[in-house]
Length: 625
Image 1 (tube, rainbow, N blue to C red):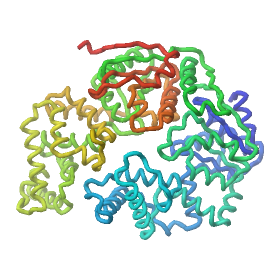
Image 2 (image 1 turned 45 degrees about the horizontal axis):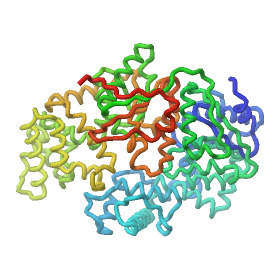
Image 3 (image 1 turned 180 degrees about the vertical axis):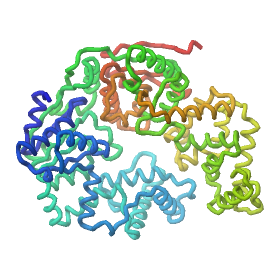
């Protein structure tokens, strides 16, 4: 394999601390694994003395696969959390703690803390996801309940109450000998701080450390590394691709590596082997607006590819027209000779992808959601679909089982057992079995009556516009409140589930009966089960990290979408845009709209950063309406 000068320098630098600033498409993982090969085969370094750390299981598998191809074995390749867990297990064994992985147990505990213990709200209104995110944020920043905590804007409860929730939660875990994923790094750090024998043991084992994706490292991860080895550590990363600050990632650690460690050699892998010159030109222009590009170690990327096509920016009146154009363009690309799996559509949020799923289905374009759920699998959407399916067919036991206690009707396992037993005895559906239960039992009456009322309404209005029926279900069952655990802003805009429901309601407007809509859903699910690999890829920008495609569409280049209204750190969003742009190898299409979900939107401020590098085509309309 041929390497350029900077890649060779990286591979041949074996001793000392090294910071490799690697631009998108620079082949950093290949370089990292070839460096390990050189260490083992030419410098006689024991594979068991090498520790390679990365952030995800997928990245870990990728490194292991490349090492296997190079016939290198016995190197420890770990994620930060798997390595931390090994440290914990080596000290405490595997029986001292129970690793808490069951979501419903955690949810039950947090509900108990908020409703029964602290009397902050009733159990139905506990904002579970926000509280777990708050606790994770503290742990990623090594904050105990006794420290000054980090609070996000608009917390679900007062700051002193959030602090007490965290404290009570940790006390509960300690009493029950429970630890969770977010505890691993802090526990490993504590072991290294207090157990010199264990620290020395790991220092002696791992003489050489390599860390990939260092731009996303958190304070707890950085401290663990520094305690372990400060003599032979190589870090690889790109500050311009630091997109995980919401998880505690801090790009300052890669920017300041040469001051935090002694005698650091800095190498820049700035040749992009992925993107055409046109795309790299656009990415470089955007990079100039990212503060990290002003750092002393930043070097502008260059492409080893030729010019191919200037990136295009398309303007549409609304997101419906945007989706139609994307589908039409994919048809053109297919005709030009591209396969579907050469094409990716990137969006800032999952809600944006819903309309694309619908449009691509209508246009018979095969697609798949990468590392995510189709919109029919999202809990808030699946719930509404289940009501429609049950209204259409009261023998649909699967739909009944999913919805009978959603929202919470206090219909417990005893209720379900009684319904199920009667169903078997009488050879009738679960829904019809419900009519055999004595509704004089006050515990069940209200819940049963509500289900019957809602299903009757849907049956009596089954030839109505589906968008109207979705709105009915959202209002009658207070679904928005249920799926967001009661956490909303005044206009309901701050929750992703609300965005998903709004997009879903918008999509449903083109269906005029429950039968037609359920038929569409069944067709869509059948398509998704198709094992054909030639499919257009739909994914969020966060999920696209590390991937590359000949053709990339970035939809929704609008203010409040990209950059997203929930993220106050605009530089984070700009880096996310940079990541999206640098996924494209040959052709890049950006688009923005005037109306999204019926709301007026402005063009993204990021477009101004790159407008001199792209071709702008305004006011397109595909539908002809």
